[in-house]
Amino acid sequence: MHVSSIQHSHSGVYDASQSSPDAVSDGQTLDNSGDLGVSDIMTFEGYYVGNMEMYADVDTVSTYLDAHQGWFTRCAQPMDVKPIGHNGYAISLGRFASLNFQVQPKIGLHLLPQNKGIYCIETIPVPGYEPEGYDVDFRAAMSLAERHQQELPSGQSTHVEWELNLQTQVRMPKFIRALPQSFVKTSGDKLLNQIVRQISRRLTLKVQEDFHTMMNLPLPGRKGPFRRSV
Picture 1 (cartoon, one colour):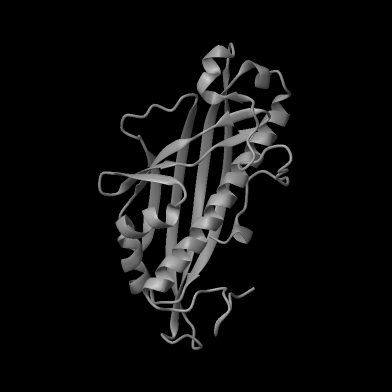
Picture 2 (cartoon, rainbow, N blue to C red):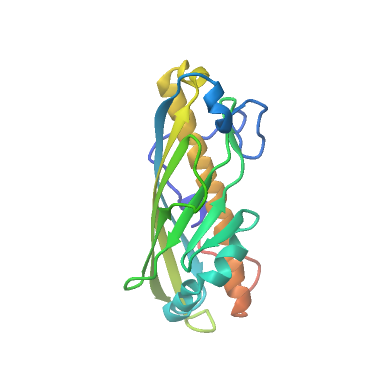
C-alpha cells in the first residue's frame, strides 16, 4: 500500500492548486445540487495497486487481518467509522473539492472473510443513508506472500499486495457541465487519484504501526536494525 506503488489508469499529475482535499473552496456543494438546474451523470474511475511489508509469518499476519473489528476502526482514524453488522463499516471520507464543487462522500465497505489467503472488499449500502448525487463502486483484493528474511528475528516476513478498482458516478451541476467534458473528466480522475493516494498512504502506515507495535516487532521503514527496501 505504499503510495509510490499506486498506479492510476489515467495519466497526469494532480495539481493541488486546482483541487485539494485539504483546502475546500466556498463553492457549490453536492447536497444542494437540486438548486443548480439540470444535472448529468459523469463517471470517474481508476485502477490502483500497492503493497506493504509485515515482519512476521503469513499465519500471524492473517490472524491479525482476520480480526478487523479491532484494527480497522483504530487505523482508519481520523475518518469517522461505524460498524455495519459483523464485517461491514460505514466510512465518512471527509470533504473534497474540485472546480469549485464540493462533495462529502460516505461509503459502506464489506470486508469479506479471507478465501485461501485472498481478502476482498466491496461496497455495501449504509443503513439509513441515501447518497445525494453520487454512487461509489469499490472492489479491492489483497493477497499475502511469505518471504524468508534471515536478518529478521523470526526469519520470515509477509509481503502484502493489493489492487483496487474504483468507479464513482457523480451528478454534475449545470455550471460544471458547461465546461469541456474532457477537462472535467481529467480533473475528476485526478482528484479521485489524490484521494486514494492520501487515504492509502495513511492507512498503510497506521496498519503497519498497529501490527508491529502489538507484536513488539521493528517497524518497516523506520530507524532501527531494519530498513524498507528501495
